[in-house]
Length: 302
Ligand code: 13P
Ligand code: SF4
Image (cartoon, rainbow, N blue to C red; front, top):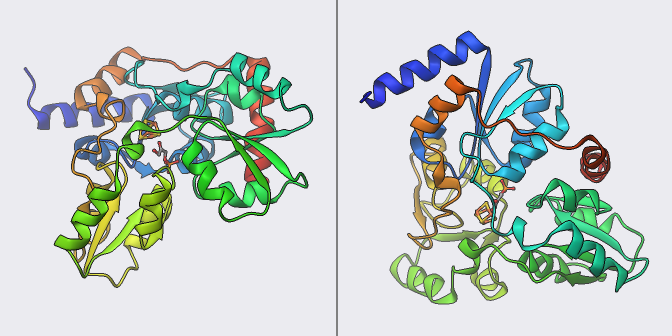
């Protein structure tokens, strides 16, 4: 049995030998965030993967994120330490289901949240993230748009645009299980605190929050907020990152059990195995990649 310190030392040694880099999503466990070279949101990390000189990328996140990184840098080796770390929301729509749905709405464009498979992206016109969804939708000339897979993000956008947003009925169980009662309880307990929530939350939770931020925006705001206490309505892993950025602020989870079990599948042992065994390599079929990349690059240009 290796100690934690021995595992971390071995990870660093192998990383240097292999000229690899470790990227970790904001929701990863603290130990994995601490061993990573960069921590960020899904798009930031994928774009970073494409811009770095290292040829081997250990992507500590969920499958669609590693897949997006691979599509943006196909010549690199992208390793996901746990092959079963998926996103249940991304799995709520398949390419076949999207094709069938498009047939029932002829001529309508499709905007897909980055939390979707490469195959679903390939069937979409434009991709978006939680921080740019409104801008992406507004960039289209069409009056009505199909939006997949998150109904809560779709609803959040719909309330800020005059366009008709037709949502797919998907959701993130972690954010959807944050309820109004959790907001009311925290408001009572911490009357001076600000409440920040992610747009994957339910509309009634968003209505009672002070600010609505993607994970990347929360990270930026954490560094400059004047609040003394901030209640965070998203996956609890991000608290580690926010607290490190600004130790002077108390960041409190809106719901202590808001865990994404897939994000938590990766640990130091699996990062070490990924480097030792070169696993699990993410591959995307080139015809799928080409089409999906069009939707991703259109978003990046916006
Ligand atoms: P970001 O795109 O903000 O990294 O979030 C991804 C996610 O899975 C949110 O639940
Ligand atoms: Fe998917 Fe929700 Fe987990 Fe994000 S928090 S990876 S949307 S299940």
